Image (cartoon, rainbow, N blue to C red; front, side, top):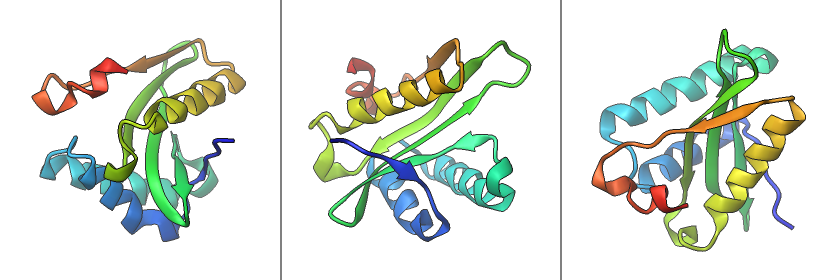
Length: 128
């Protein structure tokens, strides 16, 4: 069974390592990921971001961030999804996406937007 759990402050370093190791983010984007994660922890239960993580063998292997779009009718945005290098091309990202879709449904979401960059590094991502 594939399970994800909520991110906790002790995950911060690994969360950023998985994000960086995915090769999907430029340096300045990683600082935005760090800011999002810091804001998430600072907000406690009131965070606008949902950030489940996938862990295997005691190591963080995948990270996700999604949020409800403000001033929209039950519209959600997938902000990021990243899978650690050794887990790529093994269906982990697809399974993580299914978990996100289920969570959005549980929250009565109407639609989940998934946007990607047009940079070459996202070619495999767009093939999901």
